[in-house]
Amino acid sequence: MKFLDTAKVYIRSGSGGDGCISFRREKFIEFGGPNGGDGGRGGDVWAEAADNLNTLIDYRFQQHIAARNGGNGMGKEMAGAKGADAILKVPVGTQIYEQDDATLIADLDRPGTRVLLAKGGNGGFGNAHFKSSTNQAPRRANPGQPAEEKTIWLRLKLIADVGLIGLPNAGKSTFLARISAARPKIADYPFTTLNPQLGMVRIGGADFVVADLPGLIEGAHDGAGLGTKFLGHAERTRVIVHLVDGTQTEIARSYRTIRKELESYGQGLAEKPEIIVLNKIDAIPADALKRKLASLKRASNGTVFAMSGVTGEGVNEVLYAIAGRLRDSAREPSGESAHGWAP
Image 1 (cartoon, one colour):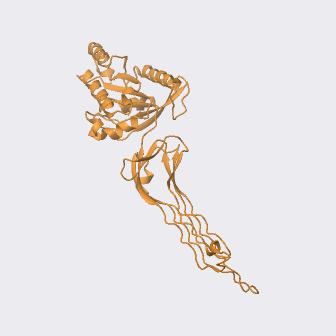
Image 2: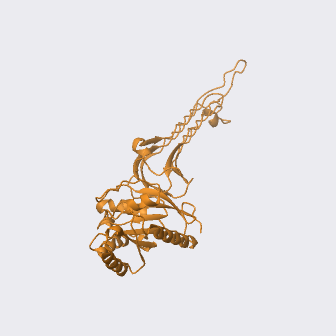
Image 3: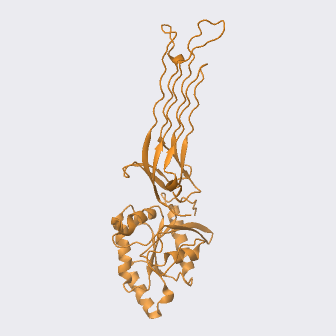
């Protein structure tokens, strides 16, 4: 299924039904009086987070969503039927914005969360509503209230436990394919991954979701290479795995480039727990590997794992480190996982 994380949708609630003007007409009843019923209320438009969705692709082909109008009132004081609601089913993690694409309406970050986007119009009163001691035969009824309509933006930010980041061609897709059943496109040129990919990983009794995010480049926080779009997906992850291509000559510079983009983007990305991995060690001579590991340790001032996504060397060590970091974050008061992580 094609991944789509942005959609523009026109929504319209239902109009209220019109009230009815009617009088009771029966044999032997000379003055029956008014009996026009009220109009039915128009349907509402709701958005609901569904746990079984992971893309907004449905709204590429269905860009107009409308609720049903309320039924008109009828004689014998019969009220019109309420219009059926329209419900936009969206993936968990979807943010809804006004037409200006800047004003946030709702952030549906939990399964089953619902938000009212457009309220249906109230039905009009029939003439039976206006009967009084001084006006026993009113010939007046109200029309139903008009519908609400507007255009909204849907923006999906993936909810995953772990986000894979790094420069293009750092081996993120190869790593994801090795540790999960996901089958992202893999090739030996940059920007092979153009859309985020998700994979479920199980190791040592722990289950977690890993997101392979498209490669970042310098200036990503300003939108270079669609960087802001992809960095947004990393906002909801609890741990970042930073893969560095070990075949590059300037290892430290590659690491600092990504760290600078995380810091410049903000939104707490730079403060997330980070696991640093030197990848593609199968293609590095032993003496060069030592130098590159030392260089990356100096640049990051932290622990560096060595791994080959192709051969699998060092992969389990990285996975156990991820599981440990997730377990630690789950113990923190604010540490929550959308996938039910528990220590």
